[in-house]
Length: 184
Image (tube, rainbow, N blue to C red; front, top):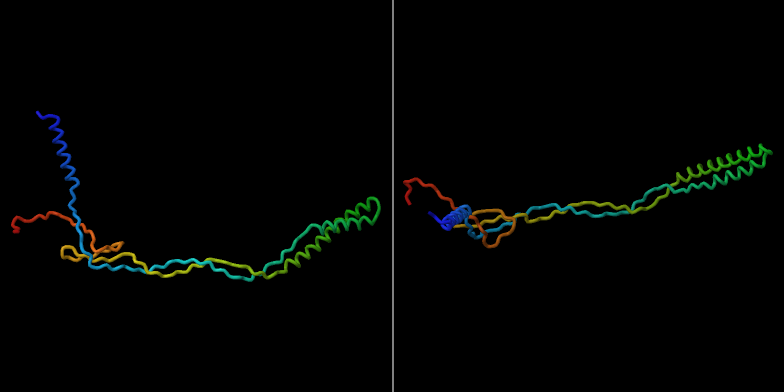
């Protein structure tokens, strides 16, 4: 009968050998001599934004201030003049009519002045700016074509970074089935 220590020793041995088999990698790494490195150069366009400003002459309407004072003053003057006519209730009616007529005359005068001034324009110089985008062409290295030698054979690859004098290569080891009549 086997003891617990013997059983656990056998299980541990199986576990270790299974892990070794699972981690077995048929790849090995070696180094190859770099024979030639040629940069791959491409032209790219780079956008360049620039703020461009200039002075521009613009025609603008002359600002006009529209005040209520002339209408009020016209109403007062019209009321004073209307108050000079009639007597009793007639005087009151003439005063009200004078107020209304004086205000209307002042408003009409003000509208005519506004139209006259509204048509007037002035030329002003204003600074105008905008962004313009132009493009400049620049040459950039985007990759490297590399020729290297491993065991007497020359190989080619493209790399993102320039290699040194040697590069690391992966070597695959695989068994080959041979026929029984193969001689060595």
